[in-house]
Image 1 (tube, rainbow, N blue to C red):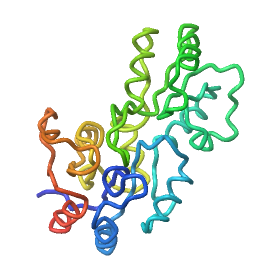
Image 2 (cartoon, rainbow, N blue to C red; image 1 turned 180 degrees about the vertical axis):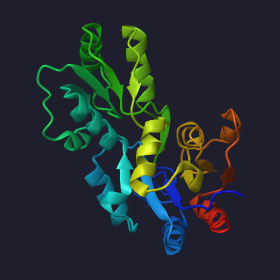
Image 3 (cartoon, one colour; image 1 turned 135 degrees about the vertical axis):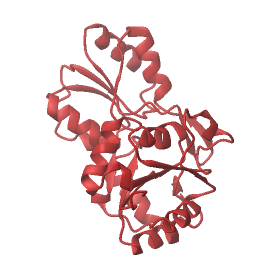
Image 4 (cartoon, helix red, strand yellow; image 1 turned 90 degrees about the vertical axis):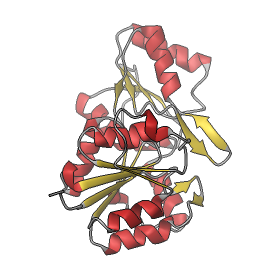
Amino acid sequence: MAAKIRGVLVDLSGTIHVENTVIRGSIQALQSLRETGVSVRFVTNTTKESKETLLRRLTGIGFDIKAEEVFTSLTAARRLVDQRNLRPMLLLQPDAIEDFKGVDVDNPNAVVVGLAPDCFNYELLNKAFRLLLEGCPLIAIHKVRYYKRGDGLALGPGPFVTALEFASDVRAEVVGKPQPSFFKQALYEMGCDAQSAVMIGDDARDDVGGAEAIGIKGFLVQTGKYRDGDEHRLANPPFAVCKDFSAAVDQILTML
């Protein structure tokens, strides 16, 4: 018998919103999901803004989401930096650096890279490159290839992390999705095992593929960064492909 669904992991950007625009039906669908009593966590690779700013954005456009329900790759990266007593060079947007408040960044002994358009210039990337040549580790908050903005698809940090890897021969340690440790931490905080959880997201590789690699059922939504045929780019097909978050929730409700 299939395990009963006890927890739902939900991606944010591209799944329930794009910047300040709600994806139609998402607020109502989230309310319906909550009414069932299942645990919900919002798991995101968003690194362009701090968790506090992200939460203000979400509540400002109508979502009822609490801070403790949001688990970001910035949170995971900060924990790693603290655990290892690193002094990172932070290739992050100023707002995202708020999540590293109190971290010593003098005389860096590591390079941490997130989505940072203002930092992806020759001088800063070259500085990071030189640190890597000196033996500093490279930590990628995530390696997303691209994401959806209001004006269309845009490059994520993945291409820039890969450039640093190529130039320095240093392999990045990735912290966010699709890493198993990221999903496992979110499940732990939710008090749910993988077999009793589902993941809803618009990224076939990082949301769905990453979740299904540890036994979570993956629901791929055809919104946000989704492009026709993404589901066929996975080694194994998603558990479900749905037109949007609302449709995914409708299917989950039949499984409870």
